[in-house]
Amino acid sequence: MPKLLAREQSCRAKLDAGQSKGTVPNPRMDVNVNANPKIPFVAEGVGMKLYKQFGRGLIAERDFQVGDIILDEKPTLVTNALGYRYTNCANCSTGFNHSLLPCPGCVSYMYCSEECLQRDKRFVHRFECGMAEKLRNAMFCSTIIGPKLFFYGLTLFDDDLQAMMDYCHGETAHGLGNPFDMDFRTKDQLDQFKVLHKAGVHHITILDQVRRVSAAVFYVLFTEHSPLLKRLVTTQAQRDFVLNCFLDYTRKCGALLLDSTESSTVSLVGSIVNHSCDPNAVLTIHGGHIKLAVLRPIAKGEQILASYGPTWWQPKPDYESCYKCKCVVCTKPSWSIKQGTLPPAAVQHDRLITTISCSPEANFADRLNVMQQFLNRYAAFHADVAYGEVLKLYNLMLKGMIQLDLTTGERAKVAASLKNSNFWTLNSEPSLTVIAPKMKDTFYDLNDACHDSPSQ
Image (cartoon, rainbow, N blue to C red; front, side, top):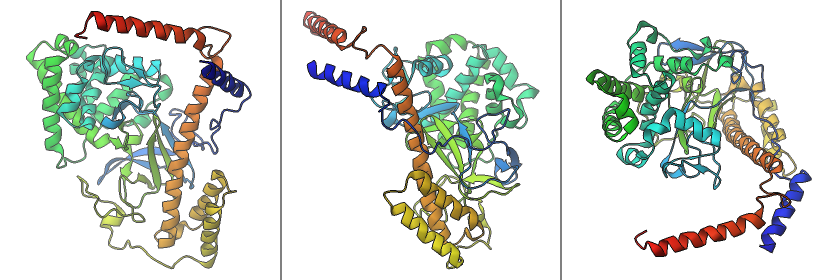
């Protein structure tokens, strides 16, 4: 106890002196150009277009330069990979290792804050609490996001299944789901759900059989084991509607999913970004944020594209996709990788990048800046091998900086909460001097209970 008290006092003193490390992001990786006045998390000049080959996609309505952060969106729905359910928030996927709040009703979901716990409970988790292990054992983790979208919509219809059926069967449910037609400042979540509902599936892939089986399995599990859904679904027409929605939303979410190692997410804007093996932007999913950063200059009228897997400058021969790639690298006969086309000035600049990247005195901002200058200045040579090497390095560093920015932001939030909280203050309760005896008493109570009831 004396050691713990001394450590607490030392940490408190350092917090008060502003010595908490890793709480000041440098550089900041927020949207760093003018934001859309109606959609604050998207850069002004980003729009949506319907492409014949790709379906919905993002289009640049103005020129963008390397280093522009053009999207910083929080996902609408999240499902964590199995290995991350006790380290990442089940609502936003933020990683708060060892400090998550558990769901009071089950052992399957944890949250980074009370706000996330209540939001997930309100929209989705109340339907699955207590049966999450059955769901996880039944199908792939990512396919559960289809039923999640259904429950999200049902909640926004105030659990009025008939009202949701009337909307889905009506004329207003058809058309193109365009989030750029909305004003996100009003935070009308029902309108946001309707945009996701209208999202079409551009083409059926070989994974559709898995999605059909998933929808059927989840339908059986929820109608048999979710008391709340059983209470809401009373007629055959309603049961058919639920089953069809499970399949429809599983298909749509399969097309909208943005995957990372930790989680799969569905969002209104980020999910529209299409794949290319010659991307002009990099998409990251980390810490409850979907971010899109410009990788090489994007001219007005170009489609904004990210890579879901391989790129021409970092191919993955063993990569298998469920769709046939239709990007310029894979379909345009005139596209080819070149070598030795960079002018002498670009070669010198490339050497400068190597020097600064290896210098222990250079900070992250300097390293990003020298690469951004190169990629902007010599964009016309972007299919050259040497240009591709800088792209690869910049892509890696950009992802690392976004992750670092979010991590420092999380640390800053925790430091602020500790500084403003009385929990760790020695001069106010409950401090360690109060908590420790209570923990001891609780332990003895539990010990006595176990001896009284050996079966437990």
